[in-house]
Image 1: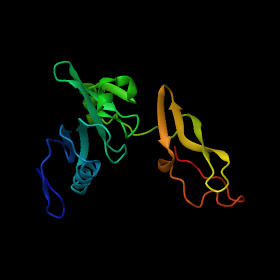
Image 2: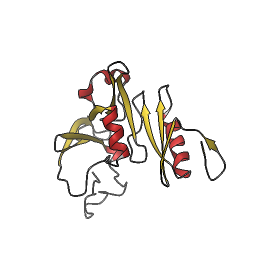
Image 3: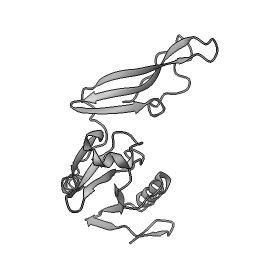
Image 4: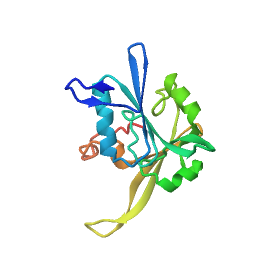
Amino acid sequence: MGETPEGDRWKADVLAAKGNHKVAVEIQWSGQTPEETLSRQERYRESGVRGLWLLRQPGFPIAKSLPAVCVGGSIQQGLTALIPLTDDMQARDRRNPERWHQAMQMGEFLRAAFSRRLRFGMGPDQEATVWIRTGTMFCWSCGAETRIVVFLEKAVGDKRFFITIPNCGFRREAGRHSDQRPATIPI
């Protein structure tokens, strides 16, 4: 049990504590909207508690502020922590670990989480290869076929990341005038 500074009470599935550090582990087997998950995560943050989510349904937001994995496998054959490749993974994808960014035994994932070995994204000194993936569309003004950037693909070692354009962090002003420097893409 815990309480936010405003007095809202909450109860985690598991609340682990070591010294002044607390982690709420939520095992969310039933469906829950991403908004509800993020709201509950914010409540933990306000209470000074880190949250860790084990979600049965995929399709949750992938963010540093929401440490979460999808639960695959079965109790009989062993549970698996599935780290999504994208935030639009489907329930049927749980049966195919090759479709995920990473899959590991649940015990291994929890040991990594509680020994502070989990990292979001890549380290600042890691080298990466980036591909710009394009498509074609017709210009709404002149009707000419033109190429557009659809997404970026980044490879770090044997891991691949797909970054959609809305998630790149472009500013609307970037590239508006030819004398401006190109926008920097935070990858």
